Image (cartoon, rainbow, N blue to C red):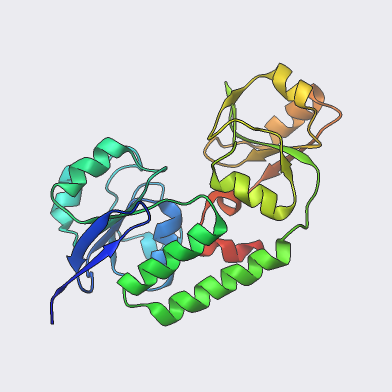
Length: 249
């Protein structure tokens, strides 16, 4: 029996690695949380991988999602590295690929998220707990499906304002919840006060990440756009596409 396995990741890349990885480095917070939840052998993480807190306390940090510490990664001797097309930077991934197998996710929809979890559960031979996790996530998302309504702008940054647009997981999730996303540009375009005024949203959702919006920002926004309901929302719920999806219920 071969001690290697070959799979295709979500970017369609062929990845060959140990048949049962024993030293995984995860470069994405939501995927790190999922891997820990299913009992995968994670030995390295980014500084933004903060959940689940207790289990991550003793796992070394290898930098951020867009600035890896290659020396720290080499010292950990991973037999598999797991990243994401959007959250990690291409140059860093290409450098890692020279020395290590790297499996990449590419997620725009809930279906992509469920497929990512299923694939990683299979790779780590954690199929049963992964199936339970995916089913719990699917049930949670079905409960909240079309429970919201209205025209919305989802802000992720300040000075300049940046919003979640098309071709993002956040956009898909907003539609799943029942919102109409007013931002038609792709990815995360900048937007001005005047453009927000013209779009006339029913709601502006201020995400708690990556910019740490707080109640003080909501107060100022309500004075700026008095006809719009401004809400502070948990960015992890709207943008983390692993087992965090269970938390919607």
